[in-house]
Image 1 (cartoon, rainbow, N blue to C red):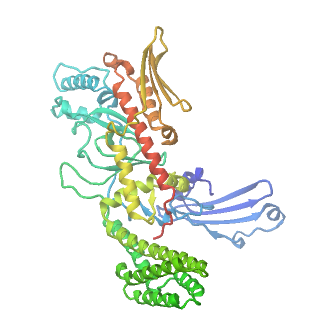
Image 2: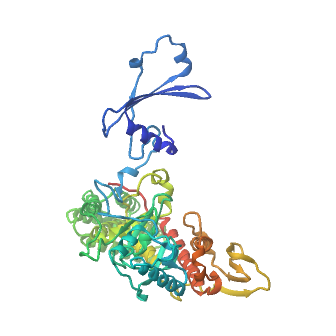
Amino acid sequence: MSDSKHSDFRRFLEYIFQEIYILELKNEDDGLAVLYLIKKAKATKTTNIQHTDVSLLKFNQEETKDFEELKWQNVYTDQQDYWLGLPESDFFQHLAIYDQKSSIFDSYQKGSARLMEAWFTDINPKLLEKKVKFVLRQYAKLHKKNDVSDPLINWPAHLLNMAEEGVTLTFDKQKIKKIELEPYVSVFAYVEEKLIAEENTGIPAIAYSQRHQYVYPLVNLWGSKFWNKFFVFPLNSQHLSGPSSLNISDSTLKNFKEHYQKKTKAHNQTFIVFPPEGITQTLDKIESVSRDLPVISKYPTQINNLLEEARHFTSDVELLTPPYKKIDEFKRKVLRLERDAIERKVIYQKVKAYIEELKDQLAILTRAHDDAKKDAEAVNKENIFYYTFAVLHDPEYPHKYQEFLEKELPRVPLYPGFRQWVAWGKLIFVAHTTEHNKSSIPSAIQMKEEIHEKKISKYFSYQFDVERGLIILTEQNKSVTLSNIPNQVWKYQFDGRYPFAHYLEYLLKWQRKKKKNQSQFNLPILDEPSEIIEQIKHLCSLSVQLVYIAEEMKDASRQPSL
Protein backbone atom coordinates (compact mmCIF):
# COMPACT_ATOMS: atom_id res chain seq x y z
CA MET A 1 0.00 0.00 0.00
CA SER A 2 2.92 2.35 0.50
CA ASP A 3 5.82 0.79 -1.41
CA SER A 4 6.70 2.73 -4.57
CA LYS A 5 7.47 -0.60 -6.31
CA HIS A 6 3.78 -1.52 -6.27
CA SER A 7 2.36 1.78 -7.53
CA ASP A 8 1.63 0.26 -10.98
CA PHE A 9 -0.45 -2.49 -9.35
CA ARG A 10 -2.37 0.06 -7.28
CA ARG A 11 -3.01 2.12 -10.41
CA PHE A 12 -4.33 -1.03 -12.14
CA LEU A 13 -6.76 -1.74 -9.29
CA GLU A 14 -8.06 1.82 -9.42
CA TYR A 15 -8.62 1.51 -13.15
CA ILE A 16 -10.64 -1.75 -12.92
CA PHE A 17 -12.57 -1.46 -9.66
CA GLN A 18 -15.15 1.02 -8.41
CA GLU A 19 -14.93 0.05 -4.71
CA ILE A 20 -11.80 -1.24 -2.93
CA TYR A 21 -11.92 -2.28 0.74
CA ILE A 22 -8.64 -3.29 2.39
CA LEU A 23 -8.87 -5.23 5.64
CA GLU A 24 -5.41 -5.40 7.19
CA LEU A 25 -5.05 -8.11 9.84
CA LYS A 26 -1.99 -7.28 11.91
CA ASN A 27 0.19 -9.74 13.78
CA GLU A 28 3.41 -9.35 15.81
CA ASP A 29 5.63 -11.02 13.24
CA ASP A 30 3.58 -10.88 10.08
CA GLY A 31 0.13 -10.00 8.85
CA LEU A 32 -2.53 -10.60 6.28
CA ALA A 33 -4.48 -8.27 3.99
CA VAL A 34 -7.91 -9.09 2.60
CA LEU A 35 -9.16 -7.12 -0.41
CA TYR A 36 -12.85 -6.74 -1.24
CA LEU A 37 -13.16 -5.53 -4.83
CA ILE A 38 -16.26 -4.29 -6.67
CA LYS A 39 -15.74 -3.97 -10.42
CA LYS A 40 -16.71 -0.84 -12.31
CA ALA A 41 -19.91 -1.07 -14.32
CA LYS A 42 -18.67 1.71 -16.59
CA ALA A 43 -15.55 3.79 -16.98
CA THR A 44 -15.23 6.36 -14.19
CA LYS A 45 -12.34 8.52 -13.03
CA THR A 46 -12.87 8.03 -9.28
CA THR A 47 -12.48 4.97 -7.09
CA ASN A 48 -13.68 4.68 -3.50
CA ILE A 49 -10.84 3.16 -1.44
CA GLN A 50 -11.38 2.29 2.23
CA HIS A 51 -8.92 0.84 4.72
CA THR A 52 -9.00 -0.53 8.24
CA ASP A 53 -6.65 -2.58 10.39
CA VAL A 54 -7.53 -5.08 13.10
CA SER A 55 -5.41 -7.32 15.31
CA LEU A 56 -5.34 -10.79 13.78
CA LEU A 57 -5.68 -12.36 17.22
CA LYS A 58 -8.71 -10.22 18.09
CA PHE A 59 -10.26 -10.86 14.69
CA ASN A 60 -9.99 -14.65 15.16
CA GLN A 61 -11.51 -14.48 18.65
CA GLU A 62 -14.61 -12.55 17.61
CA GLU A 63 -17.61 -14.69 16.73
CA THR A 64 -19.25 -12.15 14.45
CA LYS A 65 -17.48 -9.90 12.04
CA ASP A 66 -19.93 -7.33 10.72
CA PHE A 67 -18.39 -5.70 7.66
CA GLU A 68 -20.17 -2.38 8.19
CA GLU A 69 -19.20 -2.15 11.86
CA LEU A 70 -15.50 -2.04 11.06
CA LYS A 71 -13.98 1.44 11.33
CA TRP A 72 -13.22 2.17 7.70
CA GLN A 73 -11.13 5.17 6.75
CA ASN A 74 -11.05 6.80 3.34
CA VAL A 75 -7.71 6.40 1.54
CA TYR A 76 -6.37 9.44 -0.31
CA THR A 77 -4.66 8.60 -3.61
CA ASP A 78 -2.21 11.10 -4.98
CA GLN A 79 -0.57 11.50 -8.38
CA GLN A 80 1.98 8.85 -7.51
CA ASP A 81 -0.68 6.37 -6.37
CA TYR A 82 0.47 5.97 -2.81
CA TRP A 83 -2.40 4.64 -0.72
CA LEU A 84 -0.72 4.71 2.65
CA GLY A 85 2.65 5.93 3.83
CA LEU A 86 3.10 8.75 1.34
CA PRO A 87 6.43 10.35 2.24
CA GLU A 88 5.99 13.72 3.86
CA SER A 89 7.09 16.19 1.24
CA ASP A 90 6.30 19.53 -0.33
CA PHE A 91 6.80 18.07 -3.82
CA PHE A 92 3.23 18.55 -5.06
CA GLN A 93 3.14 22.14 -3.81
CA HIS A 94 5.72 23.14 -6.42
CA LEU A 95 5.21 24.16 -10.04
CA ALA A 96 4.91 21.24 -12.47
CA ILE A 97 7.45 21.29 -15.27
CA TYR A 98 4.66 19.95 -17.50
CA ASP A 99 1.07 19.16 -16.65
CA GLN A 100 -2.24 19.25 -18.50
CA LYS A 101 -3.70 21.79 -16.07
CA SER A 102 -0.83 24.09 -15.21
CA SER A 103 2.86 23.83 -16.01
CA ILE A 104 6.06 25.79 -16.52
CA PHE A 105 6.34 24.88 -20.20
CA ASP A 106 3.56 25.27 -22.75
CA SER A 107 4.72 22.26 -24.75
CA TYR A 108 7.29 19.50 -24.86
CA GLN A 109 8.71 17.03 -27.34
CA LYS A 110 9.21 13.42 -26.46
CA GLY A 111 12.35 11.75 -27.74
CA SER A 112 11.49 9.10 -30.31
CA ALA A 113 13.23 5.90 -31.31
CA ARG A 114 16.45 6.62 -33.13
CA LEU A 115 15.97 6.82 -36.89
CA MET A 116 18.43 4.48 -38.69
CA GLU A 117 21.11 5.46 -36.20
CA ALA A 118 23.56 2.92 -37.62
CA TRP A 119 23.47 4.65 -41.01
CA PHE A 120 22.93 8.31 -40.19
CA THR A 121 25.33 8.77 -37.26
CA ASP A 122 29.03 8.09 -36.77
CA ILE A 123 31.95 9.25 -34.66
CA ASN A 124 33.94 9.82 -37.85
CA PRO A 125 32.53 12.49 -40.24
CA LYS A 126 34.35 11.01 -43.26
CA LEU A 127 32.87 7.55 -42.66
CA LEU A 128 29.45 9.11 -42.10
CA GLU A 129 29.64 10.80 -45.50
CA LYS A 130 30.39 7.46 -47.17
CA LYS A 131 27.53 5.73 -45.33
CA VAL A 132 24.98 8.40 -46.17
CA LYS A 133 25.92 8.44 -49.86
CA PHE A 134 25.57 4.65 -49.94
CA VAL A 135 22.12 4.76 -48.27
CA LEU A 136 20.86 7.50 -50.57
CA ARG A 137 21.98 5.50 -53.63
CA GLN A 138 20.02 2.54 -52.32
CA TYR A 139 17.03 4.77 -51.57
CA ALA A 140 17.01 6.00 -55.17
CA LYS A 141 16.59 2.39 -56.31
CA LEU A 142 13.41 1.94 -54.24
CA HIS A 143 11.12 3.64 -56.78
CA LYS A 144 12.91 2.55 -59.97
CA LYS A 145 11.50 -0.31 -62.01
CA ASN A 146 13.53 -3.51 -62.21
CA ASP A 147 15.92 -2.14 -59.59
CA VAL A 148 16.21 -3.18 -55.97
CA SER A 149 18.06 -1.68 -53.06
CA ASP A 150 20.50 -3.49 -50.82
CA PRO A 151 18.34 -6.10 -48.98
CA LEU A 152 20.41 -5.69 -45.82
CA ILE A 153 19.07 -2.17 -45.21
CA ASN A 154 15.99 -2.25 -42.99
CA TRP A 155 13.92 0.63 -44.39
CA PRO A 156 11.46 2.42 -42.09
CA ALA A 157 7.88 2.53 -43.38
CA HIS A 158 7.81 6.30 -43.90
CA LEU A 159 10.93 6.16 -46.11
CA LEU A 160 9.31 3.48 -48.25
CA ASN A 161 6.25 5.71 -48.55
CA MET A 162 8.43 8.67 -49.52
CA ALA A 163 10.12 6.60 -52.22
CA GLU A 164 6.75 5.44 -53.53
CA GLU A 165 5.57 9.06 -53.73
CA GLY A 166 8.66 9.97 -55.70
CA VAL A 167 10.34 12.12 -53.03
CA THR A 168 14.00 12.52 -53.95
CA LEU A 169 16.88 12.83 -51.51
CA THR A 170 20.25 14.25 -52.51
CA PHE A 171 23.39 14.37 -50.41
CA ASP A 172 24.40 17.70 -48.89
CA LYS A 173 27.67 17.81 -46.94
CA GLN A 174 26.45 20.87 -45.02
CA LYS A 175 23.86 18.66 -43.33
CA ILE A 176 26.51 16.69 -41.45
CA LYS A 177 26.37 18.23 -37.99
CA LYS A 178 27.66 17.42 -34.54
CA ILE A 179 24.82 16.59 -32.17
CA GLU A 180 24.21 15.25 -28.67
CA LEU A 181 22.99 11.73 -29.31
CA GLU A 182 22.52 11.14 -25.60
CA PRO A 183 23.95 12.69 -22.42
CA TYR A 184 27.65 13.47 -22.92
CA VAL A 185 27.77 11.59 -26.21
CA SER A 186 28.58 13.85 -29.17
CA VAL A 187 28.53 12.25 -32.61
CA PHE A 188 28.18 13.38 -36.20
CA ALA A 189 24.74 13.00 -37.75
CA TYR A 190 23.26 13.56 -41.16
CA VAL A 191 20.51 16.09 -40.42
CA GLU A 192 17.87 15.98 -43.13
CA GLU A 193 14.48 17.44 -42.16
CA LYS A 194 12.69 15.05 -44.52
CA LEU A 195 14.11 12.19 -42.51
CA ILE A 196 14.05 13.56 -38.98
CA ALA A 197 11.99 16.56 -37.94
CA GLU A 198 10.91 20.13 -38.63
CA GLU A 199 12.41 21.75 -35.55
CA ASN A 200 14.89 24.52 -36.16
CA THR A 201 18.43 24.28 -34.85
CA GLY A 202 20.15 26.24 -32.12
CA ILE A 203 17.21 26.29 -29.70
CA PRO A 204 18.18 25.91 -26.03
CA ALA A 205 16.23 23.11 -24.40
CA ILE A 206 16.08 20.99 -21.26
CA ALA A 207 15.90 17.22 -21.65
CA TYR A 208 14.68 15.13 -18.73
CA SER A 209 14.85 11.36 -18.33
CA GLN A 210 12.05 10.08 -16.12
CA ARG A 211 13.69 6.67 -16.00
CA HIS A 212 16.94 7.89 -14.46
CA GLN A 213 15.68 11.14 -12.87
CA TYR A 214 18.26 13.39 -14.43
CA VAL A 215 18.16 16.55 -16.46
CA TYR A 216 20.34 17.52 -19.38
CA PRO A 217 20.60 20.54 -21.71
CA LEU A 218 20.32 20.65 -25.47
CA VAL A 219 21.00 23.44 -27.91
CA ASN A 220 20.32 21.50 -31.06
CA LEU A 221 16.86 20.05 -31.33
CA TRP A 222 17.81 18.03 -34.35
CA GLY A 223 19.45 15.77 -31.83
CA SER A 224 16.32 15.37 -29.77
CA LYS A 225 14.73 13.15 -32.40
CA PHE A 226 17.46 10.61 -31.79
CA TRP A 227 16.78 10.60 -28.06
CA ASN A 228 14.74 7.81 -26.53
CA LYS A 229 12.76 7.99 -23.29
CA PHE A 230 13.45 11.71 -22.87
CA PHE A 231 11.13 14.66 -22.48
CA VAL A 232 12.54 17.71 -24.24
CA PHE A 233 11.41 21.19 -23.13
CA PRO A 234 12.68 23.90 -25.50
CA LEU A 235 13.01 27.55 -24.54
CA ASN A 236 11.56 28.54 -27.91
CA SER A 237 8.71 26.65 -29.53
CA GLN A 238 10.20 27.51 -32.90
CA HIS A 239 9.36 25.67 -36.12
CA LEU A 240 10.38 26.16 -39.69
CA SER A 241 6.72 26.58 -40.62
CA GLY A 242 5.84 29.23 -38.06
CA PRO A 243 7.00 32.09 -35.84
CA SER A 244 9.07 31.69 -32.73
CA SER A 245 7.63 32.11 -29.25
CA LEU A 246 8.98 31.54 -25.76
CA ASN A 247 7.80 28.19 -24.43
CA ILE A 248 7.24 29.38 -20.83
CA SER A 249 3.53 29.58 -19.95
CA ASP A 250 1.90 32.89 -19.05
CA SER A 251 0.59 31.35 -15.81
CA THR A 252 4.14 30.45 -14.80
CA LEU A 253 5.36 33.98 -15.45
CA LYS A 254 2.48 35.26 -13.32
CA ASN A 255 3.26 32.80 -10.49
CA PHE A 256 6.94 33.75 -10.44
CA LYS A 257 6.22 37.47 -10.49
CA GLU A 258 3.62 37.25 -7.73
CA HIS A 259 5.91 35.13 -5.58
CA TYR A 260 8.97 37.38 -5.78
CA GLN A 261 6.87 40.55 -5.52
CA LYS A 262 5.48 39.13 -2.29
CA LYS A 263 9.07 38.80 -1.08
CA THR A 264 9.61 42.50 -1.77
CA LYS A 265 6.39 43.41 0.02
CA ALA A 266 7.43 41.24 2.96
CA HIS A 267 10.62 43.29 3.34
CA ASN A 268 8.55 46.45 3.12
CA GLN A 269 6.46 45.07 5.96
CA THR A 270 9.69 44.71 7.93
CA PHE A 271 10.27 48.44 7.48
CA ILE A 272 6.75 49.22 8.69
CA VAL A 273 7.56 47.72 12.09
CA PHE A 274 10.81 49.67 12.15
CA PRO A 275 13.10 49.54 13.91
CA PRO A 276 13.37 45.74 14.07
CA GLU A 277 13.88 44.06 17.42
CA GLY A 278 17.58 43.33 16.88
CA ILE A 279 18.38 46.98 16.12
CA THR A 280 16.34 48.13 19.13
CA GLN A 281 18.31 45.79 21.39
CA THR A 282 21.62 47.12 20.06
CA LEU A 283 20.49 50.71 20.69
CA ASP A 284 19.49 49.70 24.23
CA LYS A 285 22.97 48.30 24.84
CA ILE A 286 24.57 51.51 23.58
CA GLU A 287 22.31 53.56 25.83
CA SER A 288 23.06 51.44 28.89
CA VAL A 289 26.86 51.82 28.62
CA SER A 290 26.77 55.53 27.65
CA ARG A 291 24.24 56.63 30.26
CA ASP A 292 26.97 58.18 32.41
CA LEU A 293 28.60 59.88 29.43
CA PRO A 294 26.47 62.98 28.64
CA VAL A 295 28.59 63.84 25.62
CA ILE A 296 27.32 60.75 23.70
CA SER A 297 24.17 59.71 25.60
CA LYS A 298 21.96 61.70 23.20
CA TYR A 299 22.96 59.68 20.12
CA PRO A 300 20.94 56.44 20.73
CA THR A 301 17.75 58.50 21.06
CA GLN A 302 18.51 60.55 17.96
CA ILE A 303 19.27 57.44 15.90
CA ASN A 304 16.11 55.74 17.13
CA ASN A 305 14.01 58.77 16.16
CA LEU A 306 15.48 58.80 12.65
CA LEU A 307 14.75 55.10 12.27
CA GLU A 308 11.17 55.69 13.40
CA GLU A 309 10.82 58.33 10.70
CA ALA A 310 12.20 55.92 8.09
CA ARG A 311 9.19 53.63 8.49
CA HIS A 312 7.16 56.13 6.45
CA PHE A 313 9.48 55.77 3.46
CA THR A 314 9.35 52.02 2.83
CA SER A 315 9.40 52.38 -0.94
CA ASP A 316 13.02 53.52 -1.08
CA VAL A 317 15.84 52.11 1.00
CA GLU A 318 17.99 55.16 0.21
CA LEU A 319 15.79 57.22 2.55
CA LEU A 320 17.60 55.46 5.40
CA THR A 321 20.48 57.82 4.64
CA PRO A 322 19.71 60.15 7.62
CA PRO A 323 20.14 57.45 10.29
CA TYR A 324 23.25 56.18 8.48
CA LYS A 325 24.77 59.69 8.61
CA LYS A 326 23.89 60.06 12.28
CA ILE A 327 25.53 56.68 13.07
CA ASP A 328 28.71 57.77 11.23
CA GLU A 329 28.71 61.03 13.16
CA PHE A 330 28.30 59.05 16.39
CA LYS A 331 31.21 56.78 15.44
CA ARG A 332 33.55 59.70 14.68
CA LYS A 333 32.65 61.26 18.03
CA VAL A 334 33.39 58.04 19.92
CA LEU A 335 36.72 57.58 18.12
CA ARG A 336 37.86 61.07 19.16
CA LEU A 337 36.80 60.48 22.76
CA GLU A 338 38.48 57.08 22.85
CA ARG A 339 41.72 58.54 21.56
CA ASP A 340 41.84 61.14 24.37
CA ALA A 341 40.30 59.02 27.13
CA ILE A 342 42.27 57.49 29.99
CA GLU A 343 39.80 56.14 32.57
CA ARG A 344 36.81 55.40 30.33
CA LYS A 345 38.63 53.93 27.33
CA VAL A 346 37.04 50.48 27.83
CA ILE A 347 33.53 52.00 27.74
CA TYR A 348 34.24 53.81 24.48
CA GLN A 349 35.58 50.59 22.98
CA LYS A 350 32.33 48.81 23.89
CA VAL A 351 30.26 51.60 22.33
CA LYS A 352 32.40 51.44 19.20
CA ALA A 353 31.77 47.68 18.92
CA TYR A 354 28.02 48.19 19.32
CA ILE A 355 28.04 50.86 16.61
CA GLU A 356 29.64 48.37 14.19
CA GLU A 357 27.00 45.81 15.18
CA LEU A 358 24.28 48.37 14.47
CA LYS A 359 25.71 49.20 11.06
CA ASP A 360 25.91 45.51 10.13
CA GLN A 361 22.27 45.01 11.13
CA LEU A 362 21.11 47.91 8.98
CA ALA A 363 23.24 46.72 6.04
CA ILE A 364 21.69 43.25 6.20
CA LEU A 365 18.21 44.72 6.31
CA THR A 366 18.70 47.05 3.36
CA ARG A 367 20.61 44.45 1.34
CA ALA A 368 17.80 41.93 1.74
CA HIS A 369 15.29 44.55 0.60
CA ASP A 370 17.42 45.49 -2.43
CA ASP A 371 17.96 41.84 -3.38
CA ALA A 372 14.24 41.05 -3.14
CA LYS A 373 13.40 44.05 -5.29
CA LYS A 374 16.00 43.13 -7.94
CA ASP A 375 14.85 39.49 -7.95
CA ALA A 376 11.28 40.59 -8.68
CA GLU A 377 12.48 42.86 -11.49
CA ALA A 378 14.57 40.05 -13.04
CA VAL A 379 11.63 37.68 -13.51
CA ASN A 380 10.98 37.03 -17.21
CA LYS A 381 10.37 33.94 -19.31
CA GLU A 382 13.97 33.42 -20.41
CA ASN A 383 15.30 33.73 -16.85
CA ILE A 384 12.62 31.29 -15.64
CA PHE A 385 14.01 28.77 -18.14
CA TYR A 386 17.56 29.07 -16.72
CA TYR A 387 16.26 29.15 -13.13
CA THR A 388 14.44 25.86 -13.81
CA PHE A 389 17.56 24.31 -15.27
CA ALA A 390 19.68 25.32 -12.27
CA VAL A 391 17.19 24.01 -9.69
CA LEU A 392 16.82 20.68 -11.47
CA HIS A 393 20.61 20.46 -11.72
CA ASP A 394 21.05 21.10 -8.00
CA PRO A 395 22.69 17.95 -6.49
CA GLU A 396 20.29 18.10 -3.54
CA TYR A 397 17.15 18.07 -5.70
CA PRO A 398 17.12 14.41 -6.89
CA HIS A 399 18.07 13.19 -3.42
CA LYS A 400 15.21 15.04 -1.74
CA TYR A 401 12.54 14.03 -4.26
CA GLN A 402 13.87 10.67 -5.46
CA GLU A 403 10.71 8.64 -4.71
CA PHE A 404 8.48 11.14 -6.49
CA LEU A 405 10.72 11.50 -9.55
CA GLU A 406 10.41 7.76 -10.20
CA LYS A 407 6.83 8.32 -11.39
CA GLU A 408 6.34 12.06 -11.82
CA LEU A 409 7.89 14.72 -14.01
CA PRO A 410 9.85 17.25 -11.93
CA ARG A 411 8.24 20.09 -10.03
CA VAL A 412 10.15 23.29 -9.44
CA PRO A 413 10.31 24.97 -6.01
CA LEU A 414 10.64 28.74 -5.78
CA TYR A 415 13.83 29.42 -3.84
CA PRO A 416 15.10 32.72 -2.46
CA GLY A 417 17.76 34.39 -4.59
CA PHE A 418 16.13 34.11 -8.01
CA ARG A 419 18.95 35.96 -9.80
CA GLN A 420 21.62 33.72 -8.29
CA TRP A 421 19.86 30.56 -9.49
CA VAL A 422 19.44 32.12 -12.95
CA ALA A 423 23.18 32.88 -13.03
CA TRP A 424 24.00 29.28 -12.05
CA GLY A 425 21.60 27.98 -14.67
CA LYS A 426 23.30 30.00 -17.41
CA LEU A 427 26.76 28.89 -16.29
CA ILE A 428 25.78 25.22 -16.23
CA PHE A 429 24.01 25.48 -19.57
CA VAL A 430 26.91 27.20 -21.28
CA ALA A 431 29.36 24.71 -19.77
CA HIS A 432 27.40 21.84 -21.30
CA THR A 433 26.56 23.25 -24.66
CA THR A 434 29.50 25.29 -25.92
CA GLU A 435 32.58 23.83 -27.50
CA HIS A 436 35.55 24.12 -25.19
CA ASN A 437 38.49 26.32 -26.04
CA LYS A 438 42.12 26.03 -25.02
CA SER A 439 41.65 28.21 -21.97
CA SER A 440 38.98 25.92 -20.50
CA ILE A 441 40.66 22.58 -21.19
CA PRO A 442 42.55 21.25 -18.17
CA SER A 443 46.01 22.18 -19.42
CA ALA A 444 47.70 19.50 -17.34
CA ILE A 445 46.20 16.61 -19.35
CA GLN A 446 48.89 14.84 -21.37
CA MET A 447 48.44 12.21 -24.11
CA LYS A 448 50.72 9.29 -24.89
CA GLU A 449 50.05 7.10 -27.93
CA GLU A 450 51.76 3.68 -28.27
CA ILE A 451 51.85 0.90 -30.87
CA HIS A 452 52.53 -2.55 -29.39
CA GLU A 453 53.99 -5.62 -31.08
CA LYS A 454 51.13 -7.84 -29.94
CA LYS A 455 47.40 -7.21 -29.82
CA ILE A 456 46.20 -5.98 -26.45
CA SER A 457 42.50 -6.43 -27.19
CA LYS A 458 40.32 -7.37 -30.13
CA TYR A 459 37.85 -4.54 -29.59
CA PHE A 460 37.98 -1.04 -28.21
CA SER A 461 38.08 -0.89 -24.41
CA TYR A 462 38.83 1.64 -21.71
CA GLN A 463 39.83 1.84 -18.07
CA PHE A 464 40.70 4.60 -15.64
CA ASP A 465 42.76 4.94 -12.50
CA VAL A 466 41.43 7.56 -10.11
CA GLU A 467 44.42 7.56 -7.77
CA ARG A 468 46.97 8.01 -10.56
CA GLY A 469 44.73 10.30 -12.64
CA LEU A 470 44.77 8.15 -15.78
CA ILE A 471 42.34 7.31 -18.59
CA ILE A 472 43.58 4.44 -20.77
CA LEU A 473 42.11 3.51 -24.17
CA THR A 474 43.10 0.31 -25.98
CA GLU A 475 42.20 -1.34 -29.28
CA GLN A 476 44.01 -4.14 -31.04
CA ASN A 477 47.74 -3.27 -30.74
CA LYS A 478 47.25 0.41 -29.98
CA SER A 479 46.90 2.26 -26.68
CA VAL A 480 46.28 5.90 -25.79
CA THR A 481 46.92 7.09 -22.25
CA LEU A 482 45.66 10.39 -20.87
CA SER A 483 47.50 11.39 -17.70
CA ASN A 484 47.31 14.18 -15.11
CA ILE A 485 43.52 14.16 -15.07
CA PRO A 486 42.50 16.90 -12.56
CA ASN A 487 41.20 15.67 -9.20
CA GLN A 488 37.91 17.57 -9.66
CA VAL A 489 37.04 15.34 -12.65
CA TRP A 490 36.56 12.39 -10.29
CA LYS A 491 34.19 14.36 -8.05
CA TYR A 492 31.38 14.68 -10.57
CA GLN A 493 29.18 11.83 -11.74
CA PHE A 494 26.06 11.78 -13.90
CA ASP A 495 23.67 8.85 -13.50
CA GLY A 496 26.38 6.89 -11.69
CA ARG A 497 29.16 7.50 -14.23
CA TYR A 498 31.78 10.11 -14.99
CA PRO A 499 30.75 12.14 -18.07
CA PHE A 500 33.74 10.89 -20.07
CA ALA A 501 32.78 7.31 -19.14
CA HIS A 502 29.31 7.82 -20.67
CA TYR A 503 31.00 8.74 -23.92
CA LEU A 504 33.51 5.88 -23.85
CA GLU A 505 30.79 3.38 -22.93
CA TYR A 506 28.82 4.49 -25.96
CA LEU A 507 31.86 3.95 -28.20
CA LEU A 508 32.35 0.48 -26.77
CA LYS A 509 28.72 -0.56 -27.38
CA TRP A 510 28.59 1.21 -30.75
CA GLN A 511 31.50 -0.83 -32.08
CA ARG A 512 30.03 -4.14 -30.92
CA LYS A 513 26.60 -3.58 -32.41
CA LYS A 514 27.75 -2.44 -35.86
CA LYS A 515 26.07 -4.59 -38.49
CA LYS A 516 27.86 -6.93 -40.85
CA ASN A 517 26.48 -5.07 -43.85
CA GLN A 518 28.50 -2.05 -42.75
CA SER A 519 31.86 -3.82 -42.81
CA GLN A 520 33.00 -1.69 -45.74
CA PHE A 521 32.62 1.41 -43.53
CA ASN A 522 34.27 0.02 -40.41
CA LEU A 523 37.51 1.42 -39.08
CA PRO A 524 39.14 0.94 -35.66
CA ILE A 525 37.91 3.57 -33.22
CA LEU A 526 41.48 4.56 -32.37
CA ASP A 527 42.49 4.75 -36.03
CA GLU A 528 42.02 8.54 -35.80
CA PRO A 529 41.78 9.26 -32.04
CA SER A 530 42.05 13.07 -32.17
CA GLU A 531 38.27 13.67 -32.15
CA ILE A 532 37.81 11.24 -29.26
CA ILE A 533 40.62 12.81 -27.23
CA GLU A 534 39.19 16.29 -27.76
CA GLN A 535 35.78 15.12 -26.58
CA ILE A 536 37.28 13.52 -23.45
CA LYS A 537 39.15 16.73 -22.64
CA HIS A 538 35.97 18.73 -23.13
CA LEU A 539 34.09 16.43 -20.73
CA CYS A 540 36.89 16.67 -18.17
CA SER A 541 36.78 20.45 -18.42
CA LEU A 542 33.00 20.35 -18.03
CA SER A 543 33.26 18.15 -14.93
CA VAL A 544 35.65 20.60 -13.28
CA GLN A 545 33.26 23.53 -13.93
CA LEU A 546 30.26 21.61 -12.61
CA VAL A 547 32.10 20.68 -9.42
CA TYR A 548 32.85 24.35 -8.73
CA ILE A 549 29.23 25.36 -9.36
CA ALA A 550 27.94 22.55 -7.15
CA GLU A 551 30.22 23.77 -4.36
CA GLU A 552 28.74 27.26 -4.67
CA MET A 553 25.22 25.80 -4.53
CA LYS A 554 25.83 24.12 -1.17
CA ASP A 555 25.25 27.29 0.84
CA ALA A 556 22.19 28.42 -1.13
CA SER A 557 18.91 28.87 0.74
CA ARG A 558 16.37 26.19 -0.15
CA GLN A 559 13.26 27.19 1.75
CA PRO A 560 10.60 27.17 -0.96
CA SER A 561 7.18 28.71 -0.46
CA LEU A 562 4.26 29.49 -2.73
